Amino acid sequence: MSAVPTDAPRDVTGNLRQMIAVLEQERQALASLDIDALTVSTRAKETLCDALMPIGSGELGAEARELARTAQQLNDVNRRVRNLLAANVSARLEALGGARTTYAPAAYASASL
Image: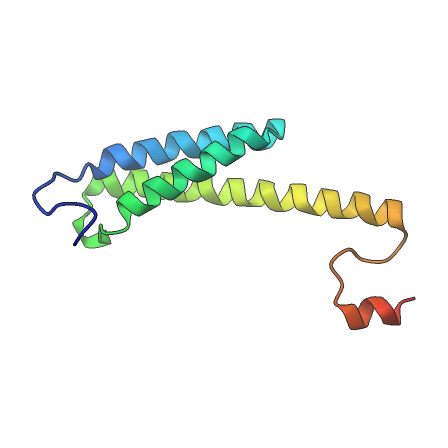
């Protein structure tokens, strides 16, 4: 049984607009390091991804394709920000703990002792 009834209208553009709004909220949460807002954003993104999953790219009109591109770009920016934050934390931990790398494989870490 499908999660979305076949006779129910699929509001792809509405879901994509919501996704863009959630991605913008996620970016603000990343900027303020607000873990609660990040958690809410993650749940909202998962829900929207589930709603969009059954939609094929061939079913998208021009407006929906543009919204999908915008959402993809925002998601990419947020991914880069998350990676920069993780790298910053890693660098700070390394500075506190010495020259050892935080995520080094066990063999490498023991060899550098």
